[in-house]
Image (tube, rainbow, N blue to C red):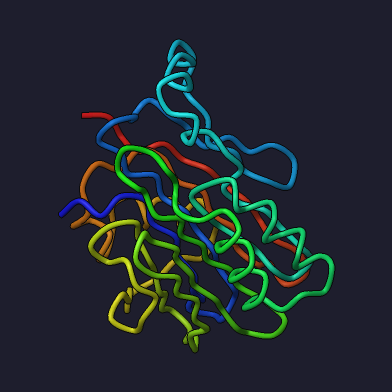
Length: 214
């Protein structure tokens, strides 16, 4: 099944907060997630910079950190969500205002914007999506060793149904590998690259990984 871009929020088996993002793409597979300081950006791989002229939405910051909160999204809404959180706004309002302001991507597919965030100190997560027909933002109760996700297609509502019951990861690198091709994510086609943030008790550990090529 192809479900497009995926954002993930959950807890490691020992209860540490995790936010992750996976690019899945049929049209623009030549991209990588790059770790730049305390954020991760998705950008074309060398030699494919011309793809930006075909679709300006394919490069963006996908992971940002804000104290005990990690944010993961599939577009330029990463930054306004993180900035609103830094100003003291709640996760719900930061998501709702940013998604409403930017709306779905006005490309040929009307690609939805998706977002996930975890607060390691408060133990809460938020998932959101803005589609051409809906704006949905929801807080979900996290449990150790489990995760929730929302994707741009098919599994495109923040709800308990979109659930990974075996999220057995202990590091950011393991989280990347998991969302690329393990557990429920193994059933989702066209993985390209992934990024993850895992709380280590005082800050977030970041990692990126490209999907294996055929």
